[in-house]
Length: 210
Image (tube, rainbow, N blue to C red; front, side, top):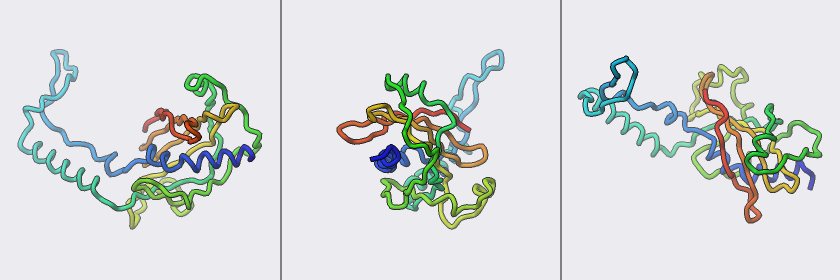
């Protein structure tokens, strides 16, 4: 098995868990709770917190409506569509330092000379409510991706970089991200390892938030 074939095999194995761990239901992500209570400040004018016992009748009603709407979203069985770029490229970041810190070993350079490959994701069965569509099916202009009206629940776009492994191919690291708008999303550094002959996600760290 070549290094590229091995990498594809690992990505395929962890892909369902990867999607569950990184994709977001934009309806919940942007469904912020309403103001509830009276803001409290100290003598210098610095904000301390909120006294919820002083919530107004209007605030109580808005909170109730928010809770009802939140539960409605959670119980909605509609598939949440996420755009996915199947072209998996090398990360722009140097991952070796974080790899050494987390796994106490080093990344070994792959024998595969390509900087990217096409990941065939279409036949991978996902666990949860997310469904992926090739990003090529969406408007090419990034700005239009977010403002276009779709006949389905569109949540955003997910992407991942190539996996870097150690010498014995027991540990791996790569980057990922979920974008839900021009200034909406978050990035991830993803650590994976082989346990009982099965690849699992060991840890996901946030690298950026917008």
